[in-house]
Image (tube, rainbow, N blue to C red; front, side, top):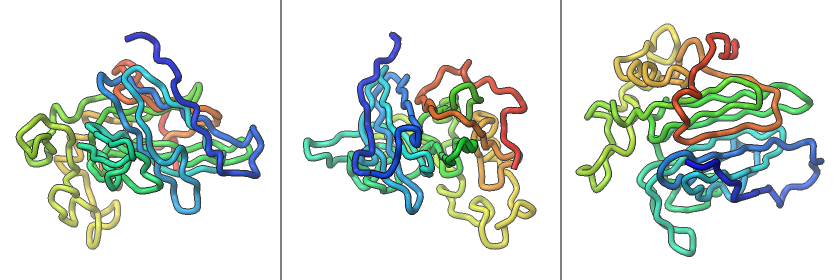
Length: 256
């Protein structure tokens, strides 16, 4: 595949009060063979970047600029079809049938990238979570820092009871649910009597996610937590990353 070209430069134009140095740049790279529709949802009190969603074609890159204190999540939507008015559906990660999610959170299962940026040169925290399931391989790293994420296609090894299939359930596997999402049981969801690290242990299902993606959260009390830090002002989020990019040193995970 040729080197991707930057096709978007998306800025939070509605914001004011920030100087140029008070931004973080997110380069969203699509190395998948098909388009990806990233969804972006902020944590409470933070702005919605780029309308909350857009399309990135295969081999393309979108650049999104957010305030240096931004906190939120990004996920990839797949199999989307939108009208000229921006309404439609996605096979996975759908956000209320809208191209621009406008702050809405995507429907699981979806591979989830989470960011917590801090000002004044303090390190950013980032991770990839499969706690709610998997739909597309994704990796994230700051400039000169380590890579978090999941480079494997978990859909290929997803057990039948967790599978989400296209064409009303008769087509190919397009996503893999977490055990919590599939069965809604306290012991898989780490709630009620299982709401602590002492009582909620890895399951055969979370181990499957962990074996495939050791640099991503596999369940609520994953330990050691695959949370990464970096003081960079630019971060690259790659859908369908090359597997070689996921070779991680043992000291790359941030200690809490």
